[in-house]
Length: 435
Image (cartoon, rainbow, N blue to C red; front, side, top):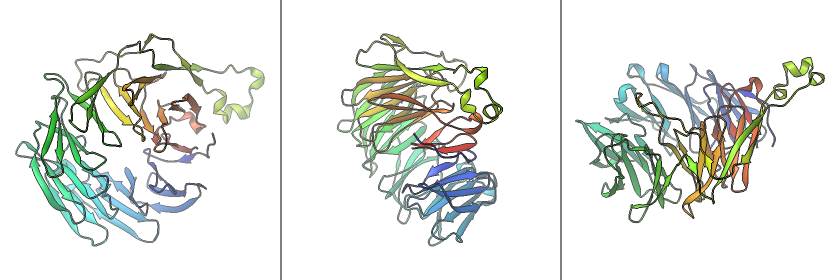
């Protein structure tokens, strides 16, 4: 595995362009764009304030840089480096900014969620959408970029508006059968909108494009409910993670549960493989030390690790949540399907050091990765069934049906690694690209 030299970055802002040709990083108020193959700088832009958010347009021709403290958004062009755009929301403030799917409109959400402002880069037209709801995921676009669903809150009731992204006219507006809507997400085939309630009530609703309620599902009552939701790439499955440490899989025909995945503290499934990370610090003799190694070579003292297969039955480390604190660390907080629909990865918050991989063909547990530190994030390879994860140290871990591997990333200062996209590793203060 080959590594590049270390590049500086801040706020973990480092993203590969959608076409895979460029790598953009932010260092305080500077935006650096590199050719992804040669890693040579091709563009260097200077923003008016330290960048808090950075995002590529869908066609990789523009980059959005948001400076929330000043309520500013600056847009830079790769084709015309001298062209730039500045959007100032003024005293109303700014809390989020994002591209529309066409890459020619910008959606800004003001402070206190007073409104969403749609800015056009082509016509300079401005549109306003009132009453956006402040929730976990209140805006989502269909995969083809034609429609946008927006959660709204009016007169203490939840509503959903569907807009046509070509001219931003309202297509449908209907009331949602939720007490306190927490999020919404379109299916990959753009036919169904999943809407779920907040954690106090287990309820997920399935709506069609014209606002018809197709189905609703509730697994139980009078307990903390849904914590995470994920569609499979084929739209055939909808995975719902909840606070009871289970994942329920709904099918796309009847929208009923076909199975549920439990996360037990003792694994007895003989078809599952438990990979346990084992660390070993190298023993360094006095004859191996030199001034150069002590000051430059951090790898001399780095902890090496490898995976060992644990005999079954295996115990999974469990942390008991504090019942007196809000947002207890319990339940399924993260779900992700592989690109080929074959696997599902899950994380249970009260088992923070473990990552679970499920076989969607057999609907059973396939593997458990037990780390020495809590899993911070994980992501699937977009082209093959391969999973990357990190735990906040200088290593990145890879899983595939063939097995697991631990890779030590040569990072200055031993900063932690955080994969924002597969094979793009971004430490807190530096960046190392590997392939």
